[in-house]
Image (tube, rainbow, N blue to C red; front, top):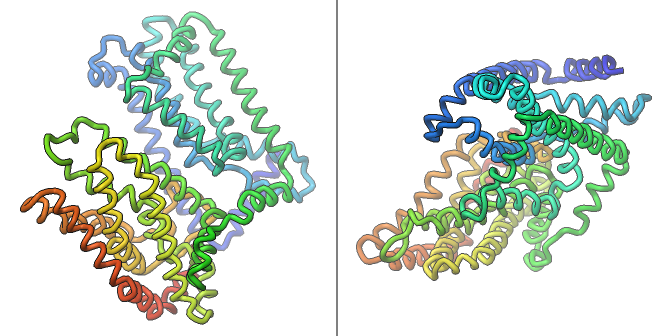
Length: 495
């Protein structure tokens, strides 16, 4: 049965209209994976020397075992945002006369075969026999390596279950946020050293195989957990029902008072929360609202008078993070249904102004959520207000206008991590004027008068942009209308 399923996968790939393109991409990615894994192996060979010199340590094992937990925390975050789920694959097999258990075993096994599975063995195998073997014996080296590798592999099954059950829910976000807080926050703020709490498990593996046995049982248990969950929920109607119920009636009533543009903004919001890629952007925007904690609590950025000039960048980023992320792919989000707006009366104008409305509302929300930063000083609140006004008057138009330069199609159902559909050179170039623009206004007044004069200048320029909104927004509308057929043609290209 496994051979039959592999044959079906090969036939699917070979019969695809983009087989040549997919084959070249697969060859390139395979070559890239081999190169990266080779670097990982090379790093593992010299890991002992790197730890001793980089951390000024005389006991490489003790240092590494004390920080291993942070490897797993990083892997947890990486898997949460990058690891793909086999749910969509289930939909292609469930109608076939094949036992459901065979299908799920095949899909789970295939998901386990990846370069990430080889990462920990390649990285820590050389270290185990260069450092641990000579000091504690070969059995201790194998036992320690087994603990390290089984812990990583167990995360694979845990994440398959966790993402399918809690992804895009408040529970899932809460757990990920707690992991971040425990991992980075505990050490940064000096609450406790998470590595010291976990190190005894690895120390125990040097004198006993019991930790290896326990972790192997955990590995089997988590695999069984993932298998049972997928087996229980592997029905087409269940998969569709979960997606439909989760986002029913998720609209924002504030948009309804703005006519057709408001209705399209409401539709845009529903599309955001119904599609995987846009939801990921929304979640990342929530995480980036904590960006100020990196700067506002860092003694390095403290000044005797006033505030650090870097805070202008931070304020611009925090009060417009969703607009910057989502807006840079302005029309690409609508690539699959752009012709619908093209054939509606005033459809293009309402689409563009609806997006303007969406960006304004989300930016207002970001500003309100960032108000607690006033705890670090009233200067921070003034910075956020000034940069918010400048964003609404100037930056919003820069983002939208530059994103209209040769927009590209993209698939909304794909994840956001390492997915560059819709991204072109414009998305990289627009970051330059967006983050330099506030300083062009701020610095002359801040250096000649004082920093607060610079903030007032930002606010005044932003207000002028808000007053001129009808004219400035029409520039974007006219550009889309002028290039509408070229844009529509580019959106029909195969991804």
